[in-house]
Amino acid sequence: MSTLTLQDVQAARDRIRESIYYSPCAHSNSVSRISGQQVFLKLENLQKTGAFKERGALNKLLTLSKAEQAQGVIAASAGNHAQGVAYHARHHGISAKIVMPTMTPLVKVNATASYGADVVLSGSGYDEAYEEARRLAKEENRVFVHPFDDPAVIAGQGTIGLELLEQIPDLEAVVVPIGGGGLISGIACAIKESKPSVRVIGVQAARMPSTIEALKAHKPTTIAANPTIADGIAVRRAGEITLPLVEKYVDEVVAVEEEEIASGILTLLEREKTLAEGAGAAAVAALLHHRTSLQDKRVAALVCGGNIDVTLLSRIIQRGLVKDGRLVRLQVHLSDRPGALLQLTKLIASHHTNIVELQFDRAYYGVSLGDTLIDITLETRGPEQIKQLLAALVEAGYRHERIQ
Image 1 (cartoon, rainbow, N blue to C red):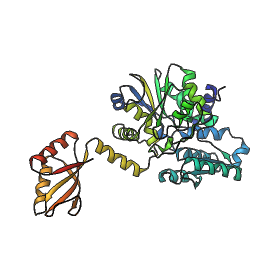
Image 2 (image 1 turned 180 degrees about the vertical axis):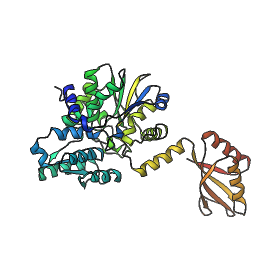
Image 3 (image 1 turned 45 degrees about the vertical axis):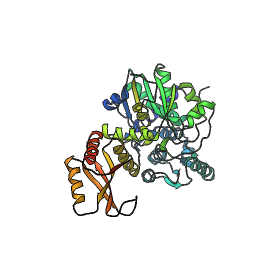
Image 4 (image 1 turned 135 degrees about the vertical axis):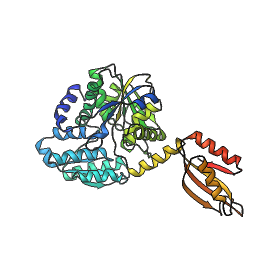
């Protein structure tokens, strides 16, 4: 027997409608062209707290009795659920305590605290933070708000599905990131019970495929923890409530690699001017790298969150530029004499490439006495310009190596 109905999702929408942003779902020409689908981006990263999680959190808070609200609430979260609970708890005068893993990105910790919650950092990952939150819930008699394995939370997330059916009347498929399964369970229930022909596809990080493993075993299975840039969906065990809903309603679950997720983040940032965190870009990554079985469909892709650490974003941008051939590093051997560097830079300048960084080495890498080795990082227009520059270095007699 299902733990969730379409009526539950509809009731959740009526309950949270006034407090939740009706996020846009615009057609993306760039993602459509690359993926071979007609792709619409549901921008849940534009919610007040930067992610879809506040839908479920708010619905849960509003279903609590007055006595339960007076007790206060507690949650465990790597960030987005934390912010959703904290923000709406403060708005409704409910005390909130949030337990977050010690390595949670600072942007998420600070945001959660700014919404008025008492933040406790505990554990190396979500599972340890979860256990601490459960302990504190009993100790302090607070109501525990689960990030995904709760019917009220799932129903709140499912309101996105109702919006998608309104925004794309001829919708043929929806692609949704999966962590514990709360988001896709709610959306899939809302869509399949309203329009069964729409395909629902889930996406997991290949390093943390807890739902994929659970589907194989037909029961929640705890998997090993692995680092992933999609920390928002880095869940080791699928939910007891969500897994049956995924089995009932979801057509396909696929996995994306770290480089593909990074590519999704960079594509959204550069082509769509949209900031997404790793989990938020997973659905787009699956489409860009053709991980789904979809062919020429009208597809909604969930950009479910945008709370990315700026340090990580900087690294992703740098890696993306290298992969696209717009940033290249070379090692070039030079005679250690006056004017040698000037001649090299003149050659580089003649090919309209920009020097970003130079580093000299006379003692390592087997450099001969009287020579020097230069590590030189260049900005280029792409692979063709790099090819022309490398050919010119060979013609000019420079020994060199491209650093990958």
